[in-house]
Length: 254
Image (cartoon, rainbow, N blue to C red):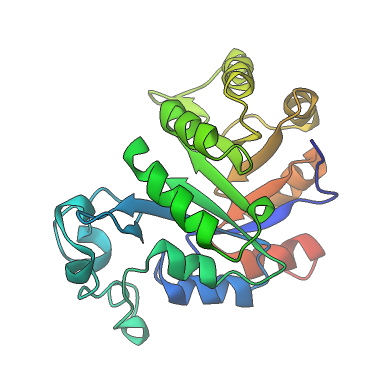
């Protein structure tokens, strides 16, 4: 495993601080704010389309209380996914995965978080095979070990990073949990971990992950001091809602 010389900045659901998350507007703004990678969330519709959506239902971002798997794509496309954020984003639609993939510049990459079950894997495999984006610029991420294992087994050439927060039932997770995550990731041939910033991350923590041959990305970081600490520790990627702002912070311009 080769590790980047400096951490990649990942736009969380696009530039979601300034634009409605998981829309083409937030994706475009993420690139405009010089993100290296873009993170999106994907779910299946009733008719098998892959759409960008974080929550289990469309309620928060469109006002429709239904789950995406209860609706056809044509119905979901009629919903407004931007007005909740600000009036200027009225008319933004829920995008499909092919639309998001087509919006990735040639020198950038994407993290696709699987928010549903393994039933989405064949559709992901099909869309990624049809995309112009080279497979080395794609990462699959998921909190569900079984789902991510199924995706990695179907697409061994695509990087897979296992997601995990740093607390459990409101308490900080012990470092022994990191060892368990590393073991689980290696057993499934995953390529890395994508951990919450609430883990006690320092240089020794990062070395522990790297020694196992795994990448280490951290989410979601919107604090300049914390980001600088993570850079010093040697992490490989930092996910943020504010990619442009964070880059300035790391360059000393903030």
